[in-house]
Image (cartoon, rainbow over all chains, first blue to last red; front, side, top):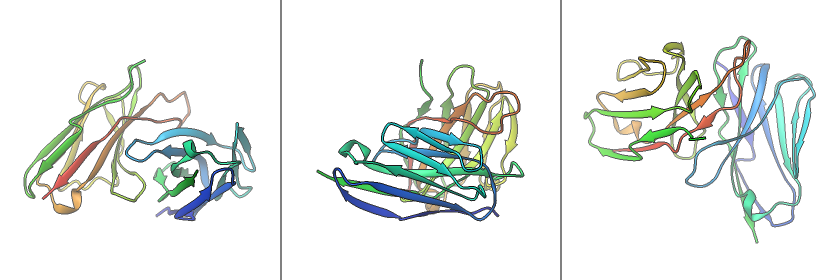
Length: 111
Length: 117
């Protein structure tokens, strides 16, 4: 079945540094979503990407969907302590089956 | 606008006991999801409803888990009997899919933290 991997598993950065997490799928994805989960909280939707090579920006966050629609990345510029949490990618394969979350990347930001 | 409501927030039971969780989605959202999130992992989709019909239950352990959404609004998820490995947070989410959409933004509830002793 479809597998979604994320790297790194953990990332510790100093406030002000940049951060990137990568998401890789074993199958071609129809779309990909990104969620953020604060410690003790629930996942909160950030964005959905649908088109091959799509790039979307939300303030300091930049999301990219690979040309082959099998990978994606989330880049945060100049991290802040409010960026702390786990970032999950989630997607569905082209057959419309198996909506799968990745294992997440946990971000810690040191002030 | 009220968010997704779930109850209880916490539940502690012994193995082989039964437990039920309740979810009330955002008003008007036809699609409802139940997820299991084990500590340190991403949410795992257990079942997806569209109104009162099941869209996907391929990862639901049907020998012990059951879910229903009889009137197409709120939903219950039951585990009977529980095992130690069922200890997790059970998340409910809802979304409002447009015509032809398979997935879009999901709104999650606060979850129910289940501990099986």
